[in-house]
Length: 340
Image 1: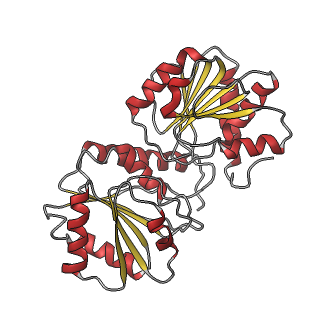
Image 2: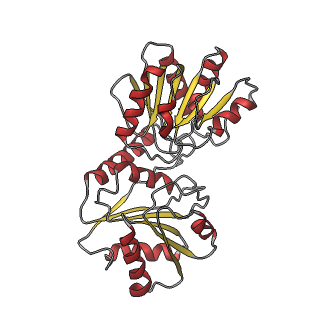
Image 3: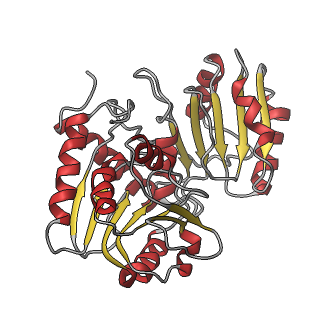
């Protein structure tokens, strides 16, 4: 039974058909390019087929446990199989899950290795992913790479659009300025922040380091003195519980100034992200793409959040992120997947 979140069934069926055709041919590697947080249900038909053949599957991802989306579906369909998550030692189960940081513990051989860099917030660079692929290449007969881009030039490559939403993917807005952002603010950014405030939005404001967190907090609270906004500092390494409750505040805007780039488990749909000093090396194109996915993943209607990049100039990473997100929208437009 398909997950109720899947709304683009034609796209789903087309993708699973391509995956099955690839598996029945000789190419060892398949790259599936898609947008962040897309569904992993596209792998279930092949996973079920391999389990029925009593062959083993390795699932590599950023999770700290097994993929519940996959396991629950297999159990609901009465599949008899053993599964495990590797923390210390590799087992001999039918379906084995492992975090990217533990791939060096893999020594068994698997019929299929799925490298999932999509379903959770990605902490891996392109080079780190390539190293994982090279290490696992000899441990697997076939390999699927689920990513925002092509990591290796081997094998076949297909793309799949968002299976759970039929709205445009958020593209970042870019503001270039010579203003010192921890001492002053360009008018365009001020207008955005006032709009966020008037609409009780929850805003994550990213900066590259702790010094800028403190300077920006002082500027916003002591110089600007913006009223009716909850402004907090959140440093990398602090407990996420410090800010979890803030996102649930009703009728009040919240600005969180942080250098902790990660997935925030925010159920609310009124989220925006502002990346200050966005031309610095701190912001990779992949981080920016995940910012865009973050503000759009819990949307219930057609209104998504905003991602605002503010820097002295447009960096290569900013430009590439803009190009990739625009490419997502070009593809879903051409496929007729939009809800209007």
